[in-house]
Figure 1 (tube, helix red, strand yellow):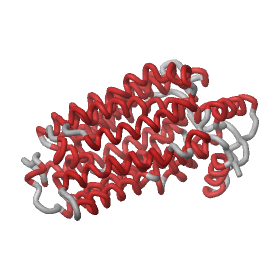
Figure 2: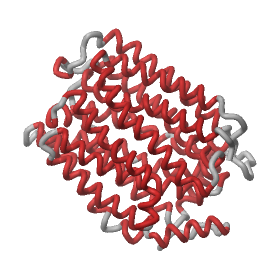
Figure 3: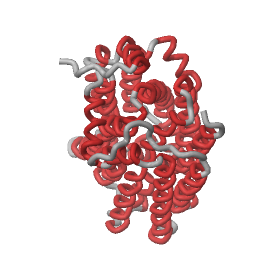
Figure 4: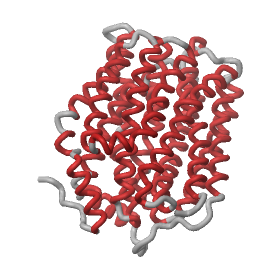
Length: 434
């Protein structure tokens, strides 16, 4: 284990996620200042997630070809520069406007800039996050991966969904450009911290350069041939699609149904952070007590109930409590599955297999955002706006319930332990189930 390496990764994660936490409030609020159209607001969320569908495969190849530390630094510098540009434009076009109620029509030029910048920053985020996950095993022993990932999730959630949204709500009150500018500065500072990480972080193993497609296909074949990671990626993709259906219009749901203004919106998103922080400290114990397979199935059940609770919530406090529960469950899932991937995927394939996994898991989000906007627009044609915004949460819950018909037999503790044992002995992954 490289001394100081993990501490610097942890510090960089805290900085960039504090900025992202500010962005959790700032960017949806910015979208609602530019347009009140639910489909267009949802399209911004779709644009944010679209890169996970189209850029993830090449990101995996680059991660295995290049020094992973330099990939992280370059990506954060790029994100900082683009976000700073957006903050500069926003400061002039939206000067003095902070209340979404003042929005009249759609500012087409600013909306176009927001979408374009969202796609650009999202592409860099894909590359950065894939490199960060594949770099971690180089500074943390395999036996400590669950604990290290738990700490990373605690720091991320404390900053991203707890401190960040509160700071974001305050900055939005001063002017949304201040919040976006803060996000830009966080990217630049995180790049500086990671740049001080000593050593080289290229993939170890047979790295004879082949065509991009040949290398990407190797990662796809490995994942698709694995009896556990294949269904795990597909289930997570369906879960992420479901959650994005509701998340895509959450800012409008908070403003028009739950109430509470920017602070109420921040409080709802903070609920997930509170639950995640708690889970970060106890996730390993939960997994040891229940078994990984049982824990993953319990997460799906709990997320279904959480979505239903938010859908019937009369105000933001009840929704925030439901977010605490789902935030806890989501972190348990992440600690279990990220550590599992890092421990069973061969090091020289880690970037590519991770990228394929995340393309499936995150690539469904743009579709979920489009579905969310369509659900609100469709229901609004036959019912009031509040009912239309609530409908997205019931759609999310329905997807989870469908998953419960297939997930329990695929994500068993026995399969998980067999995968770990196979990685320890060097046994190749099992062929796909027939």
